[in-house]
Length: 448
Ligand code: NDP
Image (tube, rainbow, N blue to C red; front, side, top):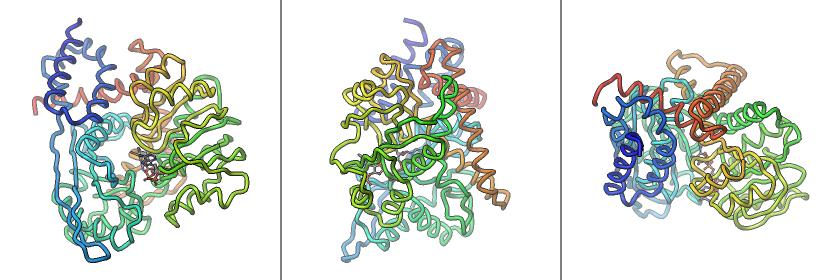
């Protein structure tokens, strides 16, 4: 075993011992370790400096109590988290997730991935993530507001425009960011750059709402162009019906593809004529309804319960845009059998390690989340720039920069994969390209 491999095996063994109850975090670390050996072989000084053990340990992690009063007058208590993983190349940056499944393991996995994603954007932002096990589903606006205010009353101690800049994620959209920002401003005064994903009337950036979905399609376009193909006429399966999925569906249609499905955690709709993103937007963003409602409004659409990945269809591209580990080994096999040749990840870590393995063996190209969904954080960083300048750029300007950033992310990831002998393994390429900049910065800054 090479020195680098032995070093990584030892670091992993110690992590398993210290965090035995953090499976999602361990999965994210494993995905990363599998691919960075050649960089460590090239830089033995990183091993000497024990850089990897430092990298997998968050610089700081907070857990806090979030008490609030529901509409019936009952006092509820949720858990809040913020993990400030690495500020080696810029202030901590990463979303907040409100979902009953949120725990320290999930926040750490997301924060760890965020370090390399943010590095890949080429912008000066470090990695962080946060959230709560609060479930916004079925809650009134008043309940969401009281919860968000209580959450921010604690979080505000730890964040700031040059320290840590949260944004949205699952369960945290424009409404939640508005309430969070309002409470921050009440306590700390006006500082627009402390959160991104803000409304346009109070410091938000045009195209931020669309950024992750649009960016996913720009990445897909770049990947296809490299194979001598285009999106024109392609059939796409999308999972999810939230922020990422809605704007992925919009951009896919604009670029000439047909999106056949959209889903939520209850079931999915299939429409051979193509999903209309405006109807999904109305159901999910305005009415806060279920995806089932889509089939009641569109004659050609049918609704099915269960996962969209268990439904056989002929299609070319899969875009998972719901949640982690939504595609396991069985579903990956099915995706390959259905004829899909590209899987680009809108959601974070949607494929289990077994699924990743199956895609590699079946020659299905996999665009990893840290590359394919980096458009959201990239435009968040552009929002920070606009807040700093006290200027607002046009939609076209932001969108053009986003497209360039996504093309560049593809080029960097594909280039690193090729250079280090990983062929078209873009997961390896993205890990390496993102890691190199962070490692260089950490090494230069000494043991801290
Ligand atoms: P939203 O809350 O807007 O939408 C999430 C969608 O996924 C909903 O349709 C939801 O259905 C579905 N979903 C959530 N959990 C599950 C589950 N366990 N099983 C099946 N379906 C589920 O979130 P986003 O669109 O913002 O985020 C989606 C993914 O994209 C996440 O992995 C997130 O981390 C990632 N991401 C988001 C970014 C952003 O800018 N928003 C940036 C980069 C990555 P239901 O309503 O039934 O819960």
